[in-house]
Each structure stands twice: as structure tokens, then as C-alpha cells.
Image (cartoon, rainbow, N blue to C red; front, side):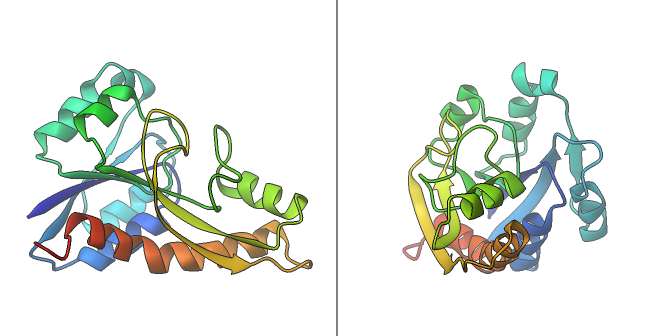
Length: 190
């Protein structure tokens, strides 16, 4: 059994799709959700989906308390599903190539600190991009710089608003993220 812990900061729609994807699996279990935002929608989703949710603050994140908890859960993989804080080096060291993030653009474009959600989609439209998409990547100590695992794209039309771009991207996120996670945590050879 592979134990996954999800980290989220927002509404949690990707987290919900991941939980639904692995529901009833005898090989993968979502043990907990960790959230850094006490007013995030993911908290209610977690309760509805029956997954324990732990809300934490910056101090317990930086001083190693959260890492120790996650390790005590016998965690195999950490999945970032809309988590906005930088992952500390001690996490990366404890889970090498086992922390995965999804970014709402085709990295390396439109990545880095402060580039998330609507900020990304606004930048894509402002730059007149002809396409955008999603990037699923390993996490290192820098925002959006870990090795790319998977990308998928969609056309950006001249008439598209940032909201249109967001909706197109979310379709790909919900479709692709759970499947890519499954391919990582349950490689075909196992």
C-alpha cells in the first residue's frame, strides 16, 4: 500500500479528483490532507470525503513539526494540489523525487514565486500566448523548477479571458493529474 499525503491551500478541486480516483484502491491510500489556510475550501471537502485534514501554521511548517508528522504517517509520496508555500529543503531531502506539484501553465513559462492561479492565467493572456496548459513536476527547493514529469496543452484563442484559460486548464488538471500520480506511485513494473 502506498500512502499519499496531499497539501492544499485553496478550494481543493484537484485534491477531490485525486481522492475520488484512488477511492477503493487496494494499492494507494490518501491518508491525510495538510492545509496552510484556515479558511480554505479544501477543509470542508476533506470532511465530506472522509479524509483527515490538518490545518497548520507557518511556524510548525518551518520548525519541522509538520515534516515529522508527515513522516510518522508512513508517507510514501507528497502531492501538492494547489499548495502555495515553498517546500523547505528538509522536505525535499526527506522525500527525494517523491513530492509532486501541478502548475497551471507550460513551465518554464509563467512559473516562480507569486505565479499561481489567476496570476498565471492573466499573464498568459497579457503575453498573447497561442497555447497554455499544465505542467506536473517534481518539487525541489525553488518554485516551479523541479524536473518536468508531464505536460498537456490547449489552444488560447485571441478572445479568451483569463477565466476562459483557467477553465480550459482545470479540465486538463482534473483529467491528467490523478492518472500521472498513479503512474508514478504504481509503476507498471510493480
